[in-house]
Image (cartoon, rainbow, N blue to C red):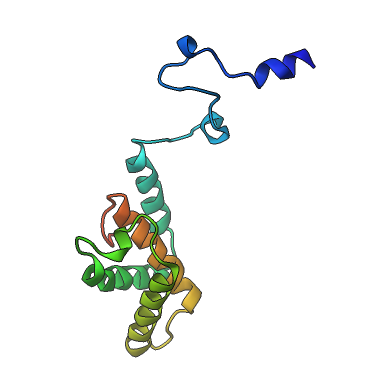
Length: 133
């Protein structure tokens, strides 16, 4: 019992540099990236996107091209907390464009997922729409 009570006590300030309390649980995980490691996370995301099926890759590229028009300074995609309904409306308009262009347009859920991935990449400085075959 004594051991566990010591674990829950915060460390003295002189033993922790720049931190005034116990570490949040996610910072104790192995391979926690934290701040300043977004490039590694984006590289991992872009690698996994290369493994998408060919149709999904094509949709991702087209969604990135369409999103270029909504990508400007002050755009809602860069809001701290983007509005869910605005993003869903953007996904619906992308879906209508893809319905006109594709013989078999993707399901709306696929469009939303690909759109959110692309928004995430742009918000964190990733390459825009670059997927390599």
